[in-house]
Length: 434
Image 1 (cartoon, rainbow, N blue to C red):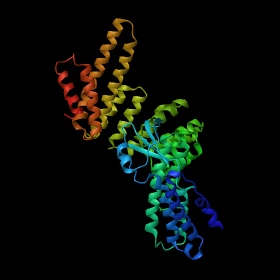
Image 2 (cartoon, rainbow, N blue to C red; image 1 turned 135 degrees about the horizontal axis):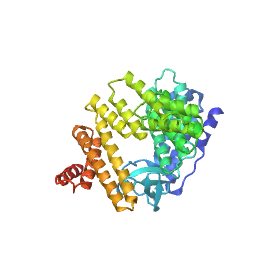
Image 3 (cartoon, one colour; image 1 turned 60 degrees about the vertical axis):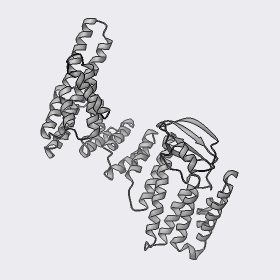
Image 4 (spheres, rainbow, N blue to C red; image 1 turned 90 degrees about the vertical axis):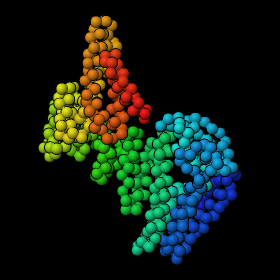
């Protein structure tokens, strides 16, 4: 009776007249598989449960079989044959406005670039939690197969189920149902656990979605799990978790998380800014942050990034000269560490923009000209560090970003020097791939 109730939901099905034949076929296949699990001899065989899992997965996939993410509307219409689009509409999703084609049993979402991004099945060919029941069937298969004779097949299906869960979670994320997305990512991670694996990315996504929806209990649990697994997401796990503690006014956990985060990932901007805000909000001396940095430098004196981090903290605190000094020191320690010179260039560029904003608000002509000259002098200071960065950078993104800065600077200062127009064209052409 227990096993009958476990899969009872699979026995009741609804379908639309458009896909009645397929529904009947899926119904019969699942009915037959469920019936086999009620036979004691057959239920003792892993293959019986594997068949049920496969039929559940097949029924789940049926409405969207042959769909390929990234395909255009024209390609999709060719792939799914005589299925008719009932209506088309525009819908705002998390990542932009999507074009939605509605069919009798599904909705297909095309991104602004025209590619199929995700889909939602509106009329499944069977009632009940098909993916969940497939997982339960595989769990039963594992129980009756202690020697693991069918392990490879079970793992193969688990991998497919994991993919389907992730696809669903992404779809609900795009639709703005973050609680449901979080829950599905959580389930996806548990499916991986059934294979003896760990899906840290799904755990992180579940935590992140929960954080956004203020489901702090789940968010804290999964962020802490990420930390325990050594998955820091460039330090974002620590800064996100710390922000939850800040909102909950748990200063002790807030501080401990950021300090733990700095030790684990000292280059994280989120952690550094979090530490600065922590000390400011608690009225403690923000210079305490340097104690962590100097301790890390003692452990790794040749780690250029730690001196860059010290420069970054000085920048956040408004200590411009010290920031430049430590940015430069990071490049001296490791001449190939281009972030040092890049940091100096960005600092001067950002400072020039601040001065420009002040000049735009100035009504006195003399003061305006003074600020404008100061802006141009500050902007010119960014040329040398950016040029050094561009010459040494091997990373395409850093090189392109540096070229963009230099292009803008030379365009702004083109009347100051006859050579600046040519240099503007040099970096502009680089960015155009010429």
